[in-house]
Length: 323
Ligand SMILES: C[S@@+](CC[C@H](N)C(=O)[O-])C[C@H]1O[C@@H](n2cnc3c(N)ncnc32)[C@H](O)[C@@H]1O
Image 1 (cartoon, rainbow, N blue to C red):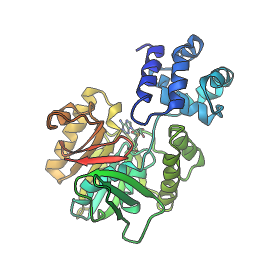
Image 2 (cartoon, rainbow, N blue to C red; image 1 turned 30 degrees about the vertical axis):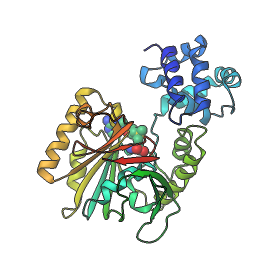
Image 3 (spheres, protein in one colour; image 1 turned 90 degrees about the vertical axis):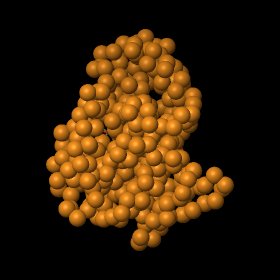
Image 4 (cartoon, protein in one colour; image 1 turned 30 degrees about the horizontal axis):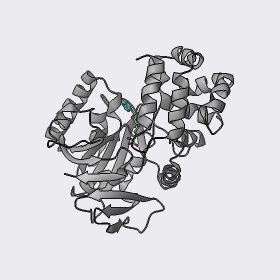
């Protein structure tokens, strides 16, 4: 797709479902500005995406406010913005996704060895270290805390269906990512913050609190491709534990052929090692999963256990509807 058209489309998506009005304005501005589009067109295609440009611009000190001020600034600051865009990738790590994972994960008897593919900084590897406040459809609020007491990270989530009553028993955790981010590295944390859309200040607060929790006991994150590195990681898990492999907002980046390879790997690991696979992805990402949904549902993300849909989830973990 042409760069201007891609930004125009991004602007429209921002108009719905809690998107960012600031990014909508900026994306419209880029779409209407041939000079900025030409700069973007000089980058490799995967580096032209709006989320990458806007996060890099904010990291480089873009003025807050509308495109009228940001557009001229971007042209003068382009060398620095371009450097960030070439060096970084969109790796948004959203700990609130743990709220939508927890009901299904907690139903699995432990001990659990939790592996995340596409883990970014690993913030979703700690669902047992966060506190939750689930709000049911009738307005009832239910709180769930870690075994050692309330966490500094409190994740609010609307829920349809049974509220979880226990935490998962996680005894081992590890992640795999093409480019793991380090919660102890201020530059990586600054990048994680820049990836959160401007109006989503509550998400930044949650992110910072989760970074503190995870930095106190950093995860084992392996650099590698989820299509090839997973079996080795599963082999490292304690033999007595049930291995749970999870992915969220990570498979979107794979080609259909690569997705097929990954699904085949999961099938093999399930048969040979009894691995449980929890996948939380946009509804178009795994067509075989979407095809198993009951008629009439219009999900954004689908949480599936071993390929069977078990919940519809909000992409940023704000709500979960158990099926
Ligand atoms: C949008 S982030 C999501 C992070 C985390 N799962 C979450 O839900 O917060 C996607 C992550 O997947 C990683 N990724 C993409 N393709 C990958 C691949 N082929 N192998 C390993 N990691 C990959 C990216 O580097 C990025 O960190």
